[in-house]
Length: 99
Image 1 (cartoon, rainbow, N blue to C red):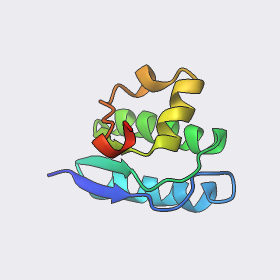
Image 2 (cartoon, rainbow, N blue to C red; image 1 turned 180 degrees about the vertical axis):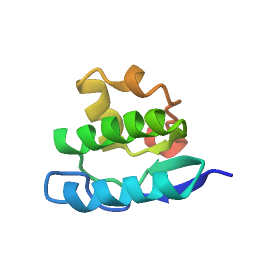
Image 3 (cartoon, rainbow, N blue to C red; image 1 turned 30 degrees about the horizontal axis):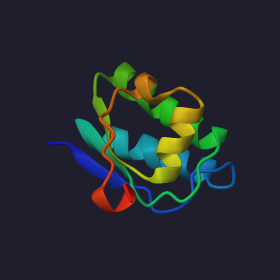
Image 4 (tube, rainbow, N blue to C red; image 1 turned 60 degrees about the vertical axis):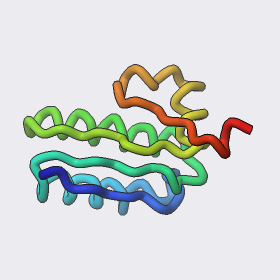
């Protein structure tokens, strides 16, 4: 059974070290991991690097890591950096976000 990790704070250089450990610990605890980023208000390149690291580490361990919810900030940053396809996770836009 996959575990679920919800990141509720910003994913910036200021939180990167603690979040890296949080992601690595969660990957080690479960056969797979669902990552909920719906509450992330801000993400920078350090946050993107953490997500790429987590995907690579999951692959190295033979585990699945899936981003199951993206905040608008995460979607915008991934789109801006042309990284959405790198993660391969479906991106859901909620009705209230559509206008």
